[in-house]
Image (cartoon, rainbow, N blue to C red; front, side):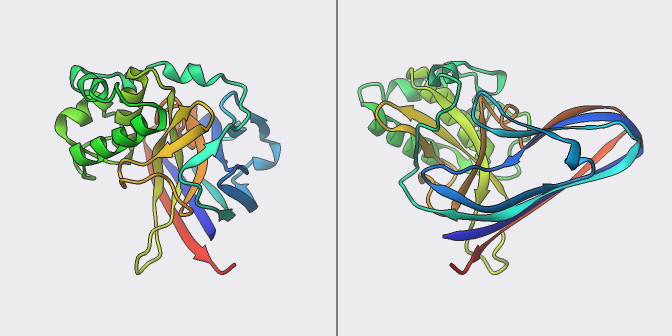
Length: 267
């Protein structure tokens, strides 16, 4: 499938920001499931940004703004050719050992309830174990956009039995790590069929399976990623893998608007 993506993030402030630095994880890269046909990231000062690959394999632009500004728009866009490989992205050649993804974070800390779910699958092996974990979380945690917020933890969402893709991914990661299987958070894009042909930024989890490498699991949609998914970046949790992170001095109250459009193109 050939998909086009346009991801626009607009910041505005009630007073001028004096200085800021940002890390942009907005550049996808080739792997077994996708080939990048074209891609650009546009924003003020982009020509001076430093580009590097971090330990998780993410393409990162490091950008600083030394001049005062009251608004800032960042637009990532391009075309990606995708292939359905049953969620298997394999070994991506990252510097980080997969075992680092056994480390818990505040948002992926487990709970007695999540531990019980994971322990019930301990008799299963490898990939089969993770597929059963996907099924269990999809059935136990209802998708609800009003039930959680950006700071909700895996334990809180699982106790509530409700959440969004971020929560499903965090719960999957917590349970997989309980089973001694490295797991991580992935951000990207999902094309869905609708009248508007529109989809938002999406998130799912990946688990490490010996002899296969990284395999994606989207409990929010009850499937492994298909050709409708475009992988962008990964990390320990939603904060670690966020498309844009940074800090600023000044600016007062910040307002944020995000618009993501994913369309299928003719091959």
